[in-house]
Image (cartoon, rainbow, N blue to C red; front, side):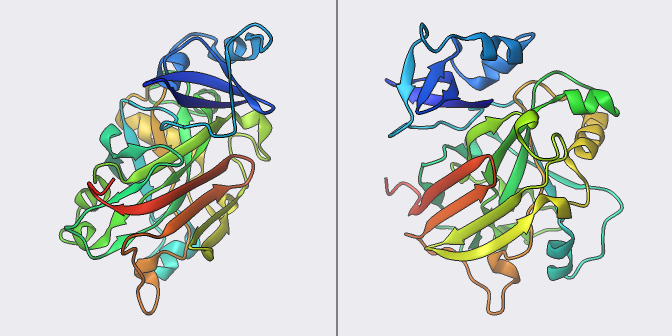
Amino acid sequence: MKLATLRVDGSTRAVRLDGDRLVDLGSADLGAFLSQDDWAAKAAAVDSGTAETYPVEGADFAPVVPQPSKVVCVGLNYKNHIQEMGRDLPQYPTLFAKFADCLIGAGDDIARPEETSEFDWEVELAVVIGKPVRRARGAEAEAAIAGFTVLNDITCRDWQFRTREWLQGKMWDSSTPVGPYIVTPDELPGGVRPELEVKLSVDGEVMQNDNTGDLLFDPVALVEYVSTVVRLNPGDIIATGTPGGVGHARNPKRYLTGGENIVTEIQGIGRLENTVAEEGAA
């Protein structure tokens, strides 16, 4: 299944993709929907012939989960990106966080803050959690994965490297598009360890193009590791890291200055298409 959170008449609705229609699942958003027991069976059981539906064409997607209890991000998780950043392969995942206020929808403008001159892109496969887990292992960690979505971990590099901790470069308001859909593992090659092409382009020029098979720590391993530290709740997001091709690692370096069109896409899941706008310009 492909699930999303749709903006409708000043509110939001959880929906399921059914051909060229989005079928209302009876919840305000996917965070609320995923908190239900047996959410997958309930989603599949909704009859598109009787439920309210909305057209896919022109759909205004909210962040797939508008208010996750946490967004955990992984740095340096593609082998080639680790090498281009001049680092050794890590023994453990490098973790940092984002907040719900960072997240925007699949077609929303990315807010470029005036305080940065090193605004960068990062295509990422993101895991969405479907059941509460703590210290999950093996099959329990696999079962906790509701599905996968697309995330662009936009980063202020000058702020990221002000200190040895990365958080302040990663947590800027209205900077991180995520969506448009959560795709359940049964629809993807590799299931909970999918092997998918990831790609990002800026104004039509491909900047990143890789496969999630290059991940050092796969999605199941990340659920195991993160849930050791903190409980994971339905709707929580784990961004699995980015491959090579970021602007900061190029020679010469390249950054987003405003007005660019960024397309972030993952095979079998969908695409984000966002314009970089000066914060407050819209």
